[in-house]
Length: 393
Image 1: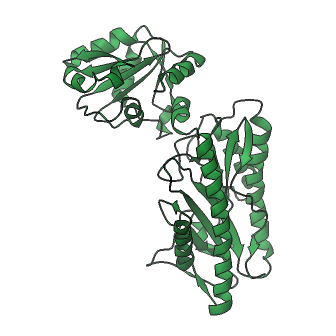
Image 2: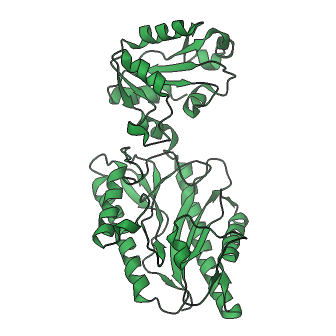
Image 3: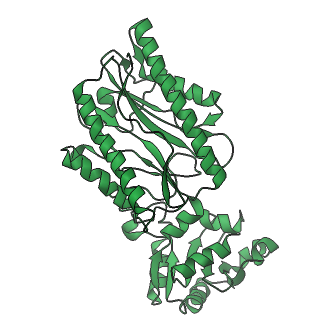
């Protein structure tokens, strides 16, 4: 049980309690703390900063909450009618001046905004100040263990090797057949992941030229392009080891089907590379000295691309959280001041991508690596592409 860690965090933040409600196990954090229970009525969990936590629950559901695994950590405050539920909330909470709840300002962080408007409004009506639990949620769901970080590094090493093999296959296809194919390379990468004992939620992105102008383009059997000499190729690939708790590698590399890369591609790649490296330099400088909020890193990359004249073509956040999740998009802080204003801390033990891009009508270009914070130092774990790969050199 993580109650002691939660209470320590509350004390550090000078918050009276963490308050969250649930109905039929929809709140993953309450399920994490209580386990899978057959709960059929509204339940409110209150974890004070010092006293024993308690559950405001319907009397019908107490039969599932009186077992030792729950009673050891939580007292029960049962209600029968809705009026009783509100009265218990009032009596219990009005002595708590500041509480954390699972919400984000303007609802900008969906992973955090789990609380309903009515519950928040009622607690506010009691004269209680409500602050976001965003960083508390992140500390519970996105901080990697030592073993998880090792799994991420291993996944990145495998992905980088398979990336090289994919570009080599394109070169072989071009020399032997005169063309390759986005779909063939996509399936090749997926097969190699499986051979390496890895899993993924979706097959990788393999996109040429204008196709790469759509950040989430992906070849399908019904719609895919052949790859010819003179084509620019983007490969975005992500996978993790099969073992439970493993963490994704998520990388993007660029190649050109020729022996030398034309200046137009080199110039635009150098801009996204500067943006990527700008984020890394900024975090290396700032993390050892202060709390860095995630949106600040997005600002760094976006300014570099905007100053180069391509601001309107950088159409997504600069990076996303990577944690133990079903996809490479994790539950922690995203490097984002574009799609949302992510005010969460870039926290010790968390990982995230760094992937600026330019998606102009003529072609799209992106570079992506994975970053991790260890001992307040920034670790690059996904490799750094310095130049576009001349595939036929």
